[in-house]
Image 1 (cartoon, one colour):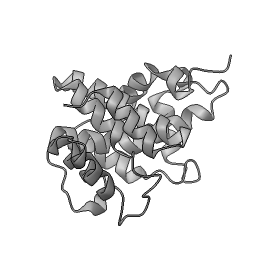
Image 2 (spheres, helix red, strand yellow):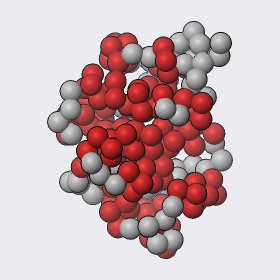
Image 3 (cartoon, one colour):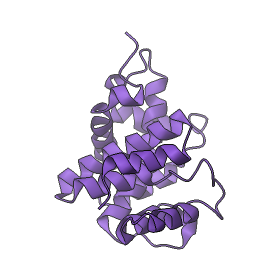
Image 4 (cartoon, helix red, strand yellow):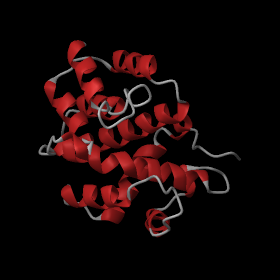
Length: 188
């Protein structure tokens, strides 16, 4: 099993965008929190979240992402279950989400981006100001964070058998744990 520092180095090798790096950190935080909740391997789930989009900046097309990344991970010795989960987070990959880790990655991916967008429009740009109820309300505003697929958020929670608002609240709490790293600890 690779360690987090190796995964972070790989991520940084392929991703220069600070916002994309922060997105992967946010998904990692959510994945780690769910691994703890479900009694799963926190390091494995964390690495899956951390690396799920590492190839996106260099290989952004549906023909490339996440397929190129999966090959790179295989060459570097990452286990099949991590690679499969990463492949399954793209609906177009043809890899059906079957395991709890795969379903959790999908459920946390778009949601973490939407939570970040919700925090950035708050007066202090802080996760401490974000509530699940307000995130649900913003999901109805199609102009807000228009690139985030609301169906992915809703379907991801449903596939895990989670109440959407509880899922949102859980991910907000997970992200609060790394708010400084995400640049979402507030401006005051």
